[in-house]
Each structure stands twice: as structure tokens, then as C-alpha cells.
Image (cartoon, rainbow, N blue to C red; front, side, top):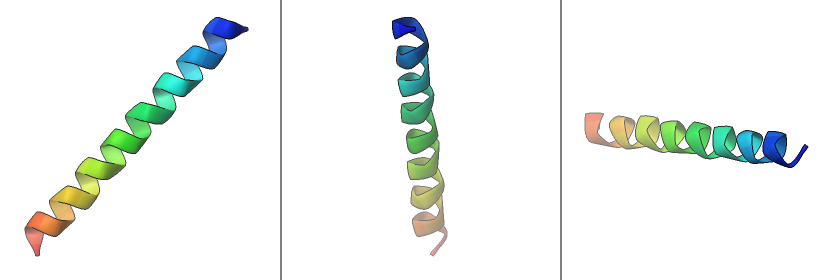
Amino acid sequence: MSNRHGNNSFALIVVLFILLIIVGASFFNY
């Protein structure tokens, strides 16, 4: 169960990082 929670946390960080990159790309486009 602990391992599953850690994996979920890692996925959340990856999603947030991708979202940050998309926002950054939008800023650079402007």
C-alpha cells in the first residue's frame, strides 16, 4: 500500500511538471 501511495505521488508530481511546461510554453508563445 505504501508503494502504491508513493507511485501515485510521483504521478502527481509528473502531471504538475507537465502542466508547468505547458503554461511556460504558452507564456513564451505570447
